[in-house]
Image 1: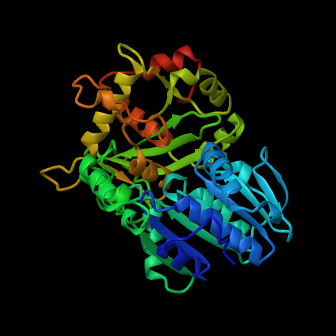
Image 2 (image 1 turned 120 degrees about the horizontal axis):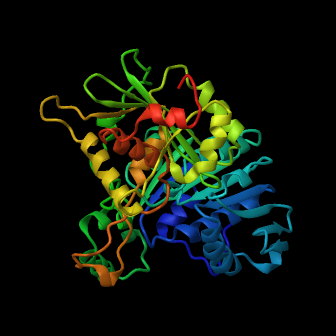
Image 3 (image 1 turned 180 degrees about the vertical axis):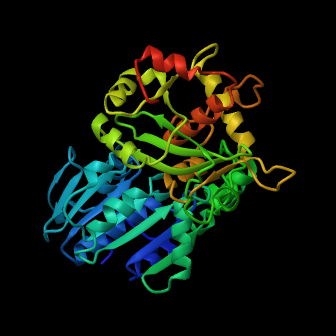
Length: 426
């Protein structure tokens, strides 16, 4: 049963609490009580059936500040708690059920034993593999349930899941909540917010509409135009390249790229993994590389990684991202080059950049890569900074680096690089 005090669900919340579908997708705008619903829903289920339950937010910090500090103490009566740990964000109830609060930013820490139920809060802001590769297998044996709740973030994986839920009347249920569905917000306050934010922000953030994010760096990117319907097989006439953005705690991204006779670029394969040792990365690269490559690009700042890869047979041309300009200027110049390739050409009706559906991480980054939010005092400033957020950009970094360097005339003399490094057969 629901905890009656102090939680008083809104009509929409009460409706969703009654849903018995295995998978529930909730597309919700701001201030509809998403987190309050989550903690009370998982509490209801933990009381009804002994089991292991999780709430997962995009980051550990969010989980701790929103759930543990603000909601758990308010809505979970001490009388039904057997023991708890703030350091582990863990609660054991008197009936044997457990609730754990997790962050998706350390995905590998989520791997483990099975679950009876999980709520993914702000799922649009997580990497899709967190559910697809880690959490979904954990509920298979138990036949457990999952709830996905989020504000939209453009047409990314949350949109895809919402479309599945809309069409599947069997295992899925779909709900759409807007700020208007919270009766505790006065209409005058809603009118004030609507008058002060942009049309795009109002539609996405408050009305929970799937729209192209106004803050996206690559506004011209279109799934229907730039992502090909089938996996790309490299053609013999293409000139083929690889490009690497090195990571340690962040993922390492490797792209396989082909350039056709007209100069169009095709990204046909990718690696996107964190925590790889050099030997593992080299093995993965060589296993996926069946062609001759005109060059492999990598950030010169990762000099040791480049040297280590060479010892395993992967030879990388170091790219200096700050030569003659700041790193920020280099990134901006690269962004403009990528935009040129995204544009639909007047003569052909097609762009000059195509991506295989196999490269899902690159696609996801195109759909979520945003400019930094300006501080209030910077609005209207002609000299305001226009830098992208340094997050979820690893595959895009590899692509941007390749396109920028590829289009620079006589940037490298390969023979000199080979000779200086005593490499043969390059």
